[in-house]
Amino acid sequence: MASISLKIFLLISIPLILLAIIAIWGSALLAPSIVRQASLSNVPYVKVSSINVTSVGVFVKLTIIKQGSLSFTPLGGWVEVVDTGQSANVSGGLLAVLPLTPQYVGLNSVGVKGIIYGYLNGSTAYIAFFDIVPIHVVNSIGIINFTYSNCLLTVYLNASLVVPAVINYAINVSLFAAYTHTYVFSTVNQPFNISLIIPPGNHVIKLEIPIKPTNEGYTYVYGCGIEPGTYYTLYMPMEITYVYPMGNTTQFTIFIKMAKGG
Image (cartoon, rainbow, N blue to C red; front, top):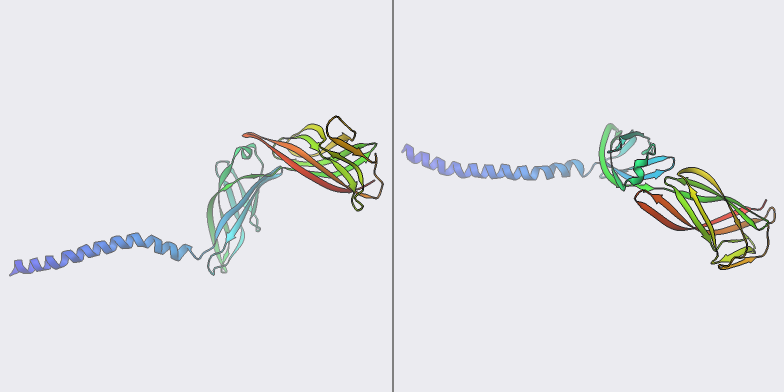
């Protein structure tokens, strides 16, 4: 009788044990997704929205991505650019500024990690983050003023560069009165060779270009000076080459500047 009872017990218990094992195994597989959905799908997180490399520093901009009903008010924090050895504090505006170093020019993207602290629905909270983001190198060249006297065009440029730049030439340059559109001079398909190398950093560059007919293109000169107190518009397309360690980049940029004759 005892052996029959033992057999019945085993027949009943073994399937139950197997069912329990299957249930535990299934719960182990399902649990991470349940925890993830419950804990991460409705809380805000931090994303690196941009990294701009300029002549005055590296600007890392962060963004709070809101999920669900929880509200996060950032107060500050810190960021570290992985493999560069650089870190910086984050302002309340979610911006960090790091010193410019030569290594950034040779990078396409970097990893950024850090912590932002603030208030989550009124309670102190910390959000850790890590992102891999592309680097945007910002080079800026613009006309700040110009003069025209004795058929000599003098142009003042403001250059803010991370890498060296070469102004190759200007073409189709024209100058006209801003409101009456009366031309002082105009050129068609006439290149003005400049070949000026500008080093990295912030500089004011002076260009002097004689306006006179050449063997290339067409030049129409209607006057060799401008009237004091009258506003004039300079139209000046230029080809500029930026010298990067991984290869040069050439851009054709149209500059338009209005200035008052002095």
